[in-house]
Image (tube, rainbow, N blue to C red; front, top):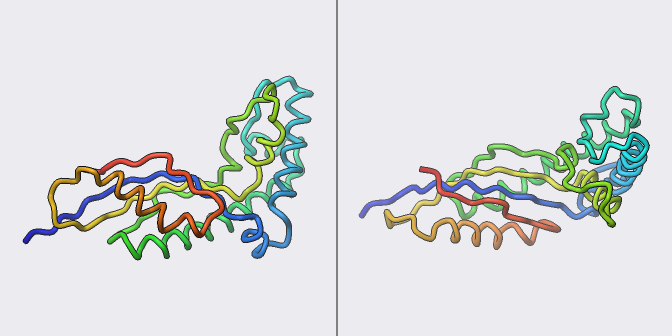
Length: 179
């Protein structure tokens, strides 16, 4: 009997509960996100930019308090570590190999919200609150059958079943087999 090792790439967005994040931090991630969002929104409206830049755009420009950016960065680092540890712990129970290709705090990416949207400020607060992480994983499944048909759906289902209970939100953004 042969055994086949199939590899799957899965992209995720994972948000930990604020209470879980706050238990490891001196300040509230939501408060940091709110302060960043209000300052960025005020600058964008004053400068008539038409879009919200990522946080790195503001470094050294005197627009945002550098300590606030640093606080978000430190919180994002801690949240990324917590997410990575929890995902690794849970997924190693069902996948033969789990490797992290990337882990990025969403707060430091380009916001998808625009200033003209009716709920722009609330969506910006959510974006800049450093409790959401984008994760790219490569995982292996050992199976007895050589045909990987249906493996993407299976990997997605198993992943969600094992990790959803640990987080406030889990969104699978992509799944594909790796040849």
